[in-house]
Length: 334
Image 1 (cartoon, rainbow, N blue to C red):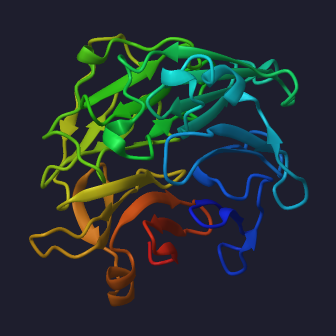
Image 2: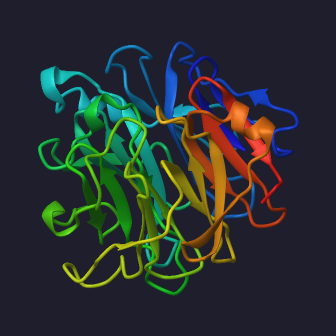
């Protein structure tokens, strides 16, 4: 388990959260806004974190570790590029990260970063990952993809690990401010026109707008919005541009982060507390978004009020949920 943290920067557990260790990078005064893991090789996995100043949009950087349990962190020098490109020549914070590889998995590693108020960036390195060879390019301007996400210091970036040869080139991000879903078909080098990818529902707010890809089914992508029943399924997210259409599901109220259990069609949603009195809840659907079941216990509902991330493991079946200011909840009731 890898957790970006506001106070301790980065936390790591090898036993599902029973024991947690602090694995601080050298910049201990920074906050980890985003975490990405390249798990394509045998463990340990390459881990990437986006850090920055906790209070203002400055001092942004991406760090890499080949094994946070035993090795240190290396700066990937994004700061050298953003400091001469972002507004005011300020190295702004990476608030969303994803990592992937070329079609063969043997030539290039790509790190995609959503930088707060400075658009989308891509770093390219050789395989195995070499921090000394990485070079960064701004691939979308802030006017096209709003990195500041309405002042929200996180951006939902998804790089699906879909089955089949040649399906590793797709990357997705929700632009909460413009209410759009963006897609890259070339490992994050360019991005499709946003107006062809509207996310349904009302304007997204600070704690809504999440993505999850089904790792077992090509083209299946889930999104949540802040509608009362705002859970949406896209079944051909890899298809010809302009043919996609979100399908609404019989979603639970106030959906937050969404996750798919590997090796199944099981979908999970962390429901959020709201002013109408709806409680926090962990929901599951075994039928592609129909027939949702409540899984939360009284402890869960009292300790999971403001979910920000949700991840579900295959075997053993565990759900990991991070909360704003409330740590991480781990449950096997799934």
